[in-house]
Length: 187
Image 1 (spheres, one colour):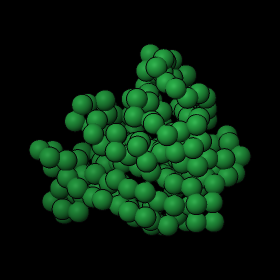
Image 2 (cartoon, rainbow, N blue to C red; image 1 turned 60 degrees about the vertical axis):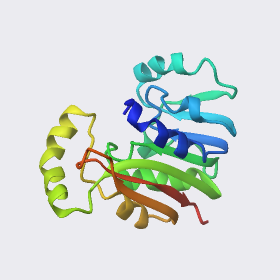
Image 3 (cartoon, helix red, strand yellow; image 1 turned 120 degrees about the vertical axis):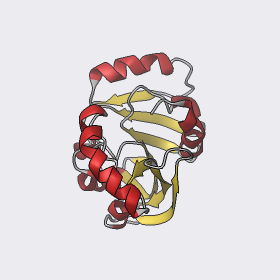
């Protein structure tokens, strides 16, 4: 997901983060340059090796970054800890997305924002059939990535109030159906 075609989407989603921020699936730190109005970034990345790689992207930050090694299904932070939780192309690959959303809701302060961009199940039935067929291969070769997860349905079945979800096909790539939006922790 480090492809330059995703850069404008990263900038837009990350630009909505504020205060104490938790980023789910921090990975190699590709989002770091786009954080502007935050106090502290908590980088949830269970892979120590991947977090080590990210350190080259962290040198020019104006805010502290704390590494959280726990998986997204069991975040090792207290309830009501964060103003914003960010997820960029992560819900497609976690093992239990419903549990991850419960954990995100738990660690967000009342009124806190969950800002996200992900890819998942297309609203085009023919493309959705192709996504279903390709998902086993994608899971094996792309870190557990499910091309066919209905991200909006997952969000709507959680406790969040959905502020906005924009759905669109990535130009020139019909099997990449995107979900971008904001959900609020109404507690």
